[in-house]
Amino acid sequence: MEKKKSSVSKRAWVIIFLLFLLTVISNADKAIIGFASVPIMKELKLSPEQWGVVGSVFFLLYSLSAVLGGSLADKIGAKKVIAGMVAVWSIVQFSTIFVSNFTYLLVTRIILGAGEGPSYALAMTAASKYLPKEKLGIGLTLVSVGGPLGVAISAPVLMHLIMSYGWRSAFITTGAVGFLWILVWLWIAKEKTVTDAELGIEKVSSQIVLNDSKFTSALFSKNFIFVALCGFATYWSFTIGLNWLPNYLENIRHLSESTLKIVVALPWIMITLSQIIFSTISDRLYHKTKNVVKGRIFVLGPVMLAGAVSYFFGAMVSSNILAIVLLSLGLTFGCITLVMGPAILVDLVSPKHQGKIQGWFMAITSLGGIVGPYVTGYFIEHSASPAVGFQHAFQLCGLILLVFGGLVWLAVRPKKSENSALLNANTSKVL
Image 1 (tube, rainbow, N blue to C red):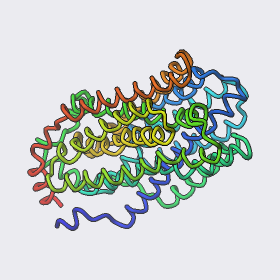
Image 2: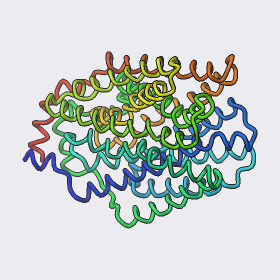
Image 3: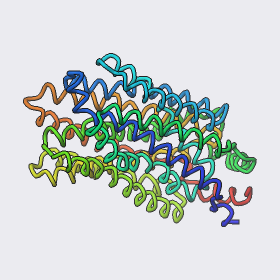
Image 4: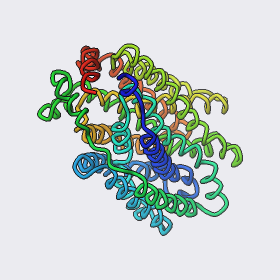
């Protein structure tokens, strides 16, 4: 009985792989704007503050579309919503090649953000339906690492295209890849619905898992809000890495083109490795303790604090090598919420509401993407020098990671974790 509960089918692994590729493509699309920041700013004559706006408007409709996409997926299925979403952002990637002014660039970024808004939440929702809880940490990580790995893999290729053929060539390439993915997804993916066994689990654990009428209570609970704010801090850090880190390394640290092609991929490789490592540790602790606090939250909190410290000191050191290492660690540790957050949310609501709760999580999380890039651009333009502006921006990011990571560590205590042994016993009976 235990073996059946923890096993993952071959079809599930195929779906996980396709969702991994989805996050690869999605984050490569996001990363282009950072890789191409210098040539685009020069061609369109944009100030640092304007570039901050370019980074922020991407998330203007991101939150709304994340909520709508999650709710729509609960009604008509994730397969159709995901396919439509990828079609939208692939079309926008092609249209970006015609950008000739600041306004047009803003419009393309807003529409692209609306198209990509539901992507992560839907990928997490679809993946969680195929995975037993004992495999959630590593399973969701295999999907999530497509994000940083997508940036790491695409960085040298996109940088080469941008430097050799102009920044528009990179947008054409990613748009074409998106359409190819849609064809494979529609051919292979089958909709996964909530099973009778899962509904049975919800019934036998009605005192533990929240039912329909209590979804709103979960949404406004201290636990959800603090986890979502932790995600807010993560996306603040994440979008600084996407929109500003390549610019910082080129204009402030004055790295050569050949070095830059390698270095821009470093933090994303580190994020990939860290998410696999920490999710594996989290899964083992969760499997051993059957407790979401000990297995998930006590991993998330300390890692976020380590990211805060890395950002703070990375902005101060004079050595290029040390700065690259520390800032990469700050970005790496700051991204752990993208894995731990969705895993924690599985313990807050029933399977029927996972689309909505993950959508709301990404909606609040992505607000950090609206604020972070603009605030960074503001500091750079209005400080004594761009270098000082970057230093203040990185230290503020560290402070935000410290505060919200600390809140999660100290205050998030899902009641269900206290009764997890009972839930697992009832689950075994149902299965």
